[in-house]
Length: 468
Image 1 (spheres, rainbow, N blue to C red):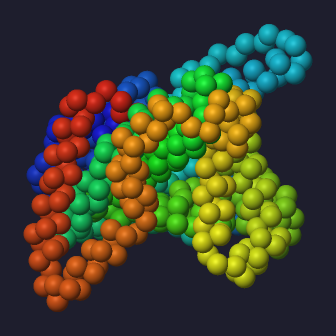
Image 2: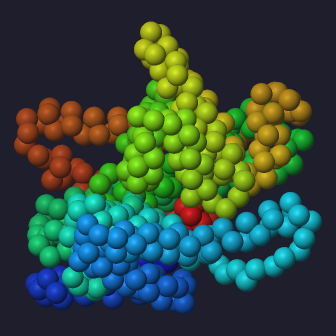
């Protein structure tokens, strides 16, 4: 089940909210969240609910052992056991087939290993449980005494399958003592609708047009077509993932939880370093706090630490060499920026660093899109005129002109302009709040109705980050 489906919007979410608010009792509401979340997860792959529960219970007992034996070898052993077990499960389901394929290619063998379909959201909830046991070991949080409350933390359907990666310490207090308010609920509804609009109206549209250009015979592709295709994919992946994060944050508010932001207009960045402070912030902070800093951070072996982190970041996104290349590509960019490029950008007009960032990110998305590295390199070649059919073609011109209003809207939506306009309108209204009370709800209703109309007649509704 995905957030941008008619069943979720018209049945699952309204029923979940109705059941949740039917009785004002914390234990009851927690159980409603657990049951609806497990049902949500089981909708697509019922068999993997057991894996989610077993993994949670295992980490629950490991955390208790860590806390009980704090300061001696048993605590460290429990931490190593928990982290190793979680990574082993993730490694088997996500990377075993990839590893065996490469071993066979290297040795010329034909070994087989039993593999299964990738459990949805396993990369997200594995990182959440790892952060939990590590934080208990560090003394940042107390171990949860109730296995059901820990299961609530791991399984909440708002962020289970697509993040953001929520840390236990950020919601530990809310599990028992959250306060649901009308203001938070209204904010959550508005945030959810904005995310839905990003996904359905922008990401799906960008993806459907991008598919007309990319993934086909590149010998017929002109230079302009290559740039247009990857630009549309850049919009698709941003609106797709940030839209789902908005929906998760919004639903969290509806149920009394406050999740951290996951995106902060990354396409307005002026460097790759800044981009990764704004893109998928929960993943970046996870690797920073649980990998980069423990390895030494900026104090020692900086190059090694950067290389490890960005190789892992690439692999986290998928068991394929193109993702490894994509991760190493950003390692190279960040290394160069640390060495001299950031200082150089400080001395020149900001427009040049913005252009650099856009070019760097767009080229990176080419590797992200193509699982075949040779195809990715060929596509980049076409972008810069190598083996391109021509500079332009009538077909690409028609696609561009037909989608020009959409491209303009997408460019604006990548910036904080709408937020600034909202603040300015409130300022001009003298703080009366009329825009917030009247105009904004009306706009949200229009967006919601448009999304439902699009979903009724739309067969193209993928979610790119499900495979991660």
